[in-house]
Amino acid sequence: MIKETDFLVIGSGIAGLSFALKVAEHGKVILISKTTLEESNTKYAQGGIAAVTYEPDNFEKHIEDTLIAGDGLCKREIVEMVVSEAPAQIKQLIKWGVNFDQNEKGKYDLGREGGHSEYRVLHHKDNTGEVIQNSLVRKVREHKNIEIFENHFAVDLITQHHLGKLVKRSHKDTECYGAYVLDLNTDQVNTYLSKVTLIATGGTGNLYDTTTNPKIATGDGIAMVYRAKGIIENMEFMQFHPTSLYNPGEKPSFLITEALRGFGAILKTIDGEKFMNKYDKRGSLAPRDIVARAIDYEMKISGDDHVHLDCTHLDPEKLKNHFPNIYKKCLSLNIDFTKDPVPVIPAAHYMCGGIKVDKNGCSTINRLYAAGEVSSTGLHGANRLASNSLSEAVVYADRAAKDAITKIKDVELKKEIPEWNAHGTTYPEEMVMITQNYKEVQQIMSNYVGIVRSNLRLDRALRRLEIIYKETERLYEKSILSQKLCELRNLINVGYLILKMAQGLHESRGLHYTIDYPKKGTISEF
Image 1 (cartoon, rainbow, N blue to C red):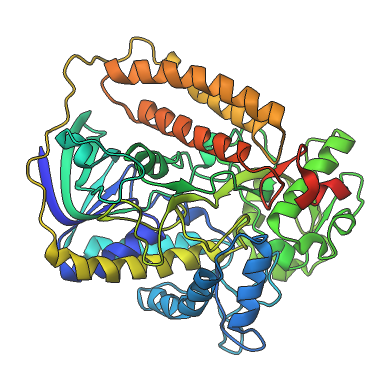
Image 2: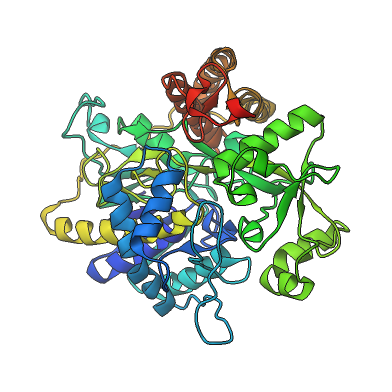
């Protein structure tokens, strides 16, 4: 089957949905989601969206906080652009029905998180992402120009390669003509042709054993663009959220938002000792890379399998009002966070690198855009400032939409694309080969490419990953496609990129800390 459209959107988080709504006034949109529209990384964003709203905050303060968190690798021009354009995009979210909390004076109730010098995080209780997601999904489902394909999995992008032409990463004329998409209901791979395509598939958290990301976060977009010979950058900078709820066996790990520390919660060892001021004068409100490494170090010293986040000194009613979902979740585990410390542990959370894009979200492949966590814009540098990601997503979705609208009238659909060739493939005889390799990839990355790294660990991880890569490619070539097989293949691609880029950085910078080159990191002071 062949489907044709003006705009193909792969991914249904805040970036994909807002882009779709903006371009739908200018042409037909097909929106691909590998589960349902309601399920995305956006849904799990508890903290909020960062933007300058009231004095004494201003753009320069937000810019400076972002640059400091990024540890010297942010592009200042991009930081200035996102910070200055975020307020207008938040107004658009409000017009689409997103309700942010207000105080008794009718002003927005702004939160503060690690690395922020002012209160600037707009939020809805502790489920901001879910409120944004649901509001955008309602608007998208109502739009007559948007055709939705849920339970569809984008397998590969279509380029000149599929017309028998050589495509290299160094080429400037590579073009995207759409994507091959697996219908998970029928196991058929269909051809989707588009004038422009947006990749908004979110992050890569399930590359690790412990992650706050939903199970769908398997690096699909990054892997597809890499295979299509697009440029990927900064993959070594995987952000581990310092405080996920310690509850072994639960996947994804329940996120304990950084806003709780902004509200006054304090990190302590299990025996009750405050420890963050040993590592940073900002204490529990230091940026995430510093806090995650500090927790990791304290756990290694003590042998404990978690630390505590203590809220018991704070006003209990205000706590429950501001963080009702966290309160409810903790109570389900017999933890009353107004009286008991909350056990927490770092978890893989956010990919700061990804598909390289320009200020309009254009990738290095023509007619292909990327926005949201899947992209590398230059905003985050070596470490993302809390709650900047949703701001980045809406700003880049807006810019990509405006750019795509101007180009689409000069683009023709590529009609001569061959259909997917599944000749000679069969269902895998033993599914255990896929599930076991999936687990092994997660264990390799968690044990060797986590918060603290070394040359020895990276080398060992790469050797083991290469074995799994070869096994999986052989299986892929002879198998009828399944979601699990495609996700495994994508995770291996993404793991390889993280490893190779981590090996190439001979210093500790932001989220990449290695014991072999500790001079830029803070852990050497521990």
